[in-house]
Amino acid sequence: MTTAAVAAAYGLNQSAPSGYESEATVLVEARLTAAAPATVGPSAAPTTASILTPVTPDVGTERAVALSDAVVLPAAGRVGADKASFLEDLTIEVTQDANVLRFAYTADNRFSARIRARALVEAYVNYRATGPTGVTVLSEPSLPDTPVTRPLGPDLAAGLAAGLLLGAGTALLRSRTRGLIRGRDDYERLTGVPVLATVPRHKRPAGTTSGAPVVLRDPTSPAAESYRYLRTRLQPSLRPTTATTVLVTSPGDRQGRTTTAANLAVTLAQAGRSVILVDADLRHPQLHHVFGISGEYGLTTLLDGEAGVEEVLEETPVPGLHVIPAGRREEGEHVDLLDSGRLARVLHAVQKHADVVVLDSTAVLSASDAIALAALSDHILLVGDFARTSRESVRRALDELAEVVHDNVSPVLVNVPKSAGALVPHARTQPTGITPHHEPLTRDRLVSDADDVAPPGVTQHAYVEVAEEEDDEAEAIAEYFARTTTVAVPVIYGSANTATVYASSTAAESSAASDSSSAVSDSSSGADADSTESADSTDSISEPEEPAEARS
Image (tube, rainbow, N blue to C red):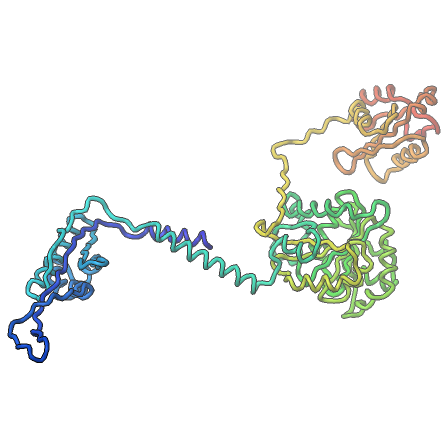
């Protein structure tokens, strides 16, 4: 606001009109007045002689006289102008500590400025020629050479002072009335722990209330990268061998907890984790809308004991991510079950099917559900919205959670502008203008790739191509390699329907299998000559005997 005020002052200064100014100075002389003769003592003889006494003139009154119709009208008529237009560019100043008037007239033409200033001075002198006050022209109206402009310094100083006062007043008023989280540092002071991640503003698809997770909808955006940053910051809190339950909640409603839970679950699954996302908000469930799945069976079904975990798991487009919707519910029918012992048993059963369980719950200050879920969770993410979450609600939510959690609450701030301390990562860029080149799957190419990924000590390789998942021949080959003492390294090339599997034997096994001449030939190169040569040159695989289906 200070910058804006200074800029406005500069603009006004530069837009102020400029012109030529002609000036003249006139001395207003003291006049002499006759006074009654003075007598000294009772016996003093009276005298009839008058005494002349000088009277200091009132310069302010003389200025008013110069601006009166008695002076202005004759001057304006002399130059052929009306009174209003003549007075518009006229300035008469009183010199401090001196009986001097300064006449100044500004006009676009320097000759016009001089003519008009002279007309006014002469009209004033003529008017005072018949009065008791004497005036003397000290300097005749000048002929200006350069135009005058408005001084810049005073205007900038005034703009700076006004901007500082206005900005300070606005900041004080905002801090007193807004009451919302002021930024990343403010959120850290409120929670007492570092903010785990900040997410910049991002738009939902038009016409939707929730929309698909941004990491799927726009994976190269800064918002998507922020959720990957959240995943990285959360990794040290995840257990390496057993399932970890992460609760995502917020102080109030519509503050980003569902969006955060969905995007976090997707990023964890994309990093290779087995994730189950549970919609534990039985009052206003949204996850079945986010992923476009059926919400008929879910958490309420498990709480009622009508089905097992595997029966209510819903698949998503993300490998490794399953969703348990809220399920069917009547008004308030299943809410109390979240505070019962059934919830702990259900979560324990869910944990057996995933590495990470992400819970999307109600707001802490909206219902008691979040408190019950927090008591059963390993880590709690308290999501705050920069545009909606109040500072007081954060304090109250922490007080509510303090009874059931201990040093496992991490704040996450969403919809944060960069000016409020958001760490906005750079968006990921996709290479353009590059056409992927897929080389033919020759034996040399496959063996070379197998050497790159095989464990140490592997010296022999056999490879096959499985074109379809449900194939009797492929199943026979897979069973054969499952019974051999080999190391299988799966590699996928091209489409998802084509998988090339390497079966590699160690050096010790190759010496024991040197007498065997059976080989598994290449069925994916597409050239008969290459296939024959590959079958002859492929090293053999030790016992058990290779099935006839696999030799082809």
